[in-house]
Image (cartoon, rainbow, N blue to C red; front, side, top):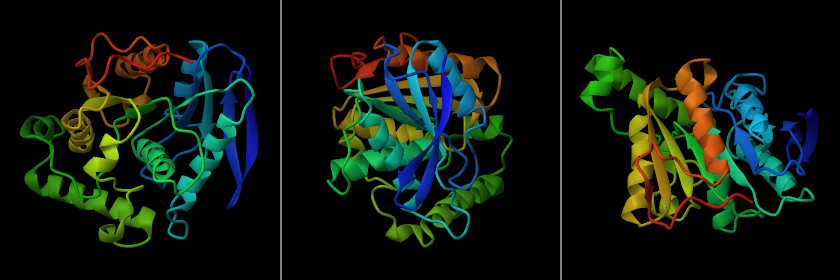
Length: 279
């Protein structure tokens, strides 16, 4: 497997990316975006490097992007623009006629955000063949998880309230302002979620962010739009950053999705004829 580090020309300066495999590898093409609350993470974290390596071992071509982090001075749309730069570059590679876009946690938000911007005609770029979203966060203000999840996480009501405040503050740090002014590319409305391409949504069973992922699935199903939901039993938020069996299972599910095989252990396909066929 060929792995190489590149620096792409972006509107805010160089955008580091790491390419796993080649466009001629014969597999699907995926831009993968790591998480980290918009303010942490890099290409070496397992959620980026291990996921990309394993998918490349399955025969797929993966481009991981190291977007600029929201550090108090950097805010939206800079991280989104960096992801967009990588997405546009991937779409222009010889042999790439269609590609998938995905990420984990805040990386999933960035993947959705770029797709929303393209769909709205705000920026140029190809429409993703599908979205691959692992334990996504898409709501600056979200409902608390159900009592079973809170009990498993050993969270008191007061701690849950603090966690939800922390989520809002995470978005405010990304935006550089109040969430009430958040654009659809950061906090998409149900109609924005319904208009997205087919999506695989991997949900961690015990996750403070789980209500956001479930709301995404519900919006898709209500609109009759293609979505495949899979609940990873026993998994917690960020499990792709571990070497636990649930991380391996989730990576295998993503590989199967990119193969066009769907997920026989999930909740099933809703709103369409089946998972997208692999390019």
